[in-house]
Length: 200
Image 1 (tube, rainbow, N blue to C red):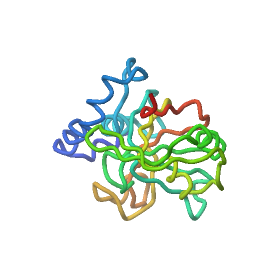
Image 2: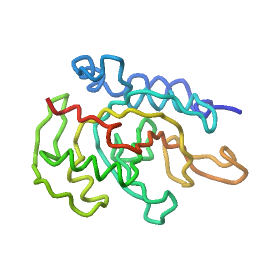
Image 3: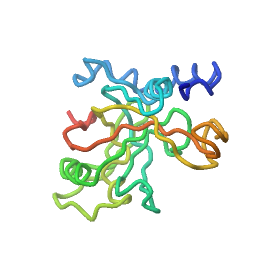
């Protein structure tokens, strides 16, 4: 069974290795990254080298740039944050939260939520009280948007049926007729898997 990375050219694979310069610079100063943290670009290259259904454990470092949830319910009740605003772009790492884990995490994030991260400099923009609002994509992004996270888990590739994506999806890759792309996922089932790297 071939790996998804076989469909990428040398330039695309090299681009993944060179991505996320600010995260690579920051992880050297993060105590929780002493065992080694994996950036979204590195996680993408790792996941695409795996076979279908395979996973690899690690500690992943990302800045939350986007998020969402499945409106059609095809992905259950999970909610997602992404390392890029366009979740279909090659090099994006998606963190898939079970609702109970996300709810517990938002309680921990009650101090200060949204922040900007520019060239490694974190600027807090808003703070929140102790109450946890209704759990949805918008309240999630209010508290997690712009945050720098360290996530323990297993990275894998997850097939998405869609004509959108980068590189451009092709037919007959996942199955007989599907057109789509692979998202690179880490599944979070417990809030303890997540550490806020921008809290000192």
